[in-house]
Image 1 (cartoon, rainbow, N blue to C red):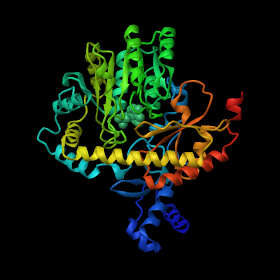
Image 2 (image 1 turned 45 degrees about the vertical axis):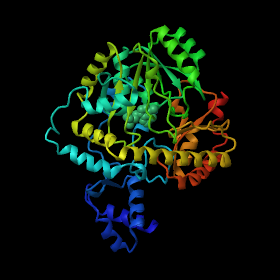
Image 3 (image 1 turned 180 degrees about the vertical axis):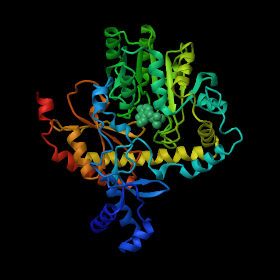
Image 4 (image 1 turned 180 degrees about the horizontal axis):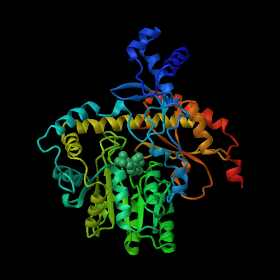
Length: 465
Ligand SMILES: Cc1ncc(COP(=O)(O)O)c(C=O)c1O
């Protein structure tokens, strides 16, 4: 592989920026090696920034480092300090070209679990419909609204189609409260939700959760201490802990929010990611006064590029949410919506649910067993479903240091600091089984264990101060 990478680097150096490299087949013949070796070497050079790939078009010579088209330093002066905290938004950059061998970082299914060929067929039918390229009804295609409504237990009129969960979160935060407002988050939480809140000028306030979800006594305290009008939580298989909001707490949390006049954004992102069991119903069903706004998405169960989700709400807030959706990007493209309709109402849907839930259960079992064997000093609670596990690192180990070392060993994980608000008394990692085949889990964990051991003492300055 080293020789092939060297040869490819020579080929790239001899060509102009933007020139196309010979095809993989030609390279195989020219270098006398198999396709896997060529692909690995190409992936290495892509990561090193020597080459870029354009799917369907080929591999090209990347702009050379240090090549400057012009001096952009003026932008630093013009931009000044960022008006929003952009730390931790790195996770939003999808590193699909990365040659990482073991993916415990991504929250999206690997290709082996995705329904890509059925998606391609559905998308091509959707794109050929006579009405395909016209505008849809602003709130979404009626069949899709009805389908989401049935899943949640809502009326179709209460559903707005959104471009996935992220777009729904963004519209919801901005529709509900003005910039500068506090927003309560059950923590640890999904960094993408914190990022959209911060980018809207909102101030995230933590309300700690335990293995049974958000703690009602701390929620009561946070409500009393702030004027927050929004609470954001994931009652079902939360990201990052995989916990469920305990049945006894559901009523208590809703009663507190009702008394304080608070909206609850229920991010129901993992509704179809149980491990063979049916999850509890959405919190939506326990509320008839319009406190709960429920967000669902098809990206986790089907594919990240099927950007289709739903925002469900009742009462006057609905017209504000609908207006915000229009302001953002008008609507979700019709072909995307019709593709989603076919995927969820077609014969493959039940099989997809079964396949994914069995695979996730097996992967999670492999992960918990490997962690118990390889990292006995790390603590975690067994996730009740979903894709995520929250791993507490031994005292003195820094999550960022472990993440960097693990990446060097070929394992992607997420540092826990992005999932929390403010100071913590321990470092964590978020491990996710969506993107890793079961057969790779044990190797990934043993490499991760090596990274953790090599990072002992790395957090001394952070936590010892
Ligand atoms: C808890 C949670 N909510 C929402 C999202 C957004 O997902 P999407 O926009 O792909 O539906 C994610 C993605 O990772 C998530 O983990």
